[in-house]
Length: 141
Image 1 (cartoon, rainbow, N blue to C red):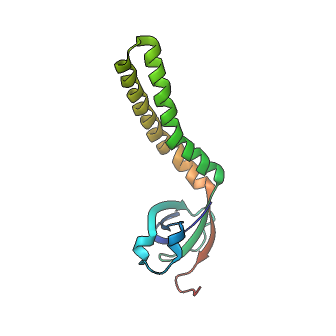
Image 2 (image 1 turned 180 degrees about the vertical axis):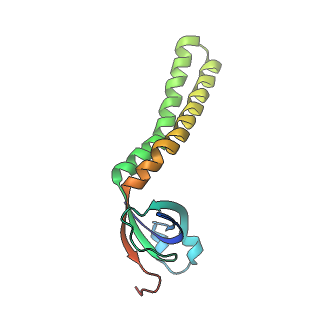
Image 3 (image 1 turned 45 degrees about the horizontal axis):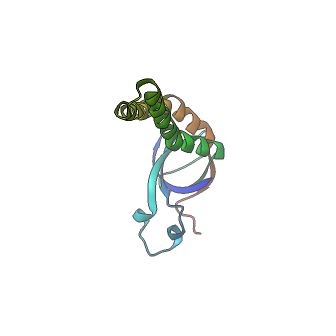
């Protein structure tokens, strides 16, 4: 999955990139530049390429990383919530307790995802996001 953004800040080998929208309306000239920017990513400059603030970067996120992350953050909490509901129903035979268990499962999944992001997520982002091309600030399209 390729994305494009502008370099906003550089800290040693970490680059803060403001990422453009990837929708159909992102390429028209009706909007100003600020409305086209959606999010900021931190990209690791592992090749030690010459990058300056204001340069336009094209970077690629590994498809496996994108799918795994999507599953973990969208599907895993839902699965854990449903499983904990059925565990509550099996052991306590009460809807109120089963609903309470489902919320406990949801909270547990969020705690797990928080620590997963802090420990594993940052390392994977450093290794699975690659800079494809750099368009210098003064270059003309």
